[in-house]
Image 1 (cartoon, rainbow, N blue to C red):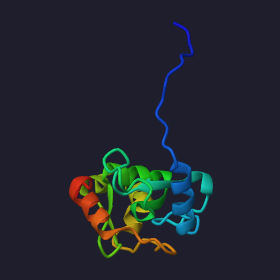
Image 2: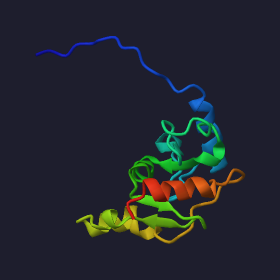
Image 3: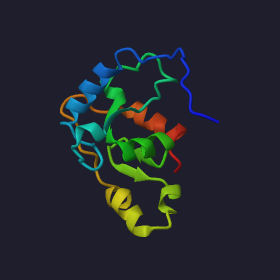
Image 4: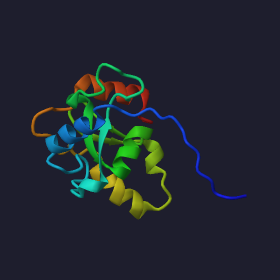
Length: 137
């Protein structure tokens, strides 16, 4: 077998770069959970999934600035955010065998407030939807 290239037609998210710029600036260029401020490691994460909510795709109230690991954890339901903006950690995440890793990545943030944005606060209904549909409790 050999490595080969093939051409494909792909879908591209139009205006995603504008959403990213607004969301990351809104959170002062740092992760709302851990405060990491390396811009290349930050993601403009959607609270309501891009694929499932067309009308709020570019709404900055549907965005969180997260580092790569917290973005993936939020997307998979290991992290949730309550209506009072406190961080919730799922039972599943608490089962990580390496307790020091759990503590540094997740545990130290549990029940603390997210770092609040400058202007566009996360929509409470969107956060509640994430807790009800994605968060692993």
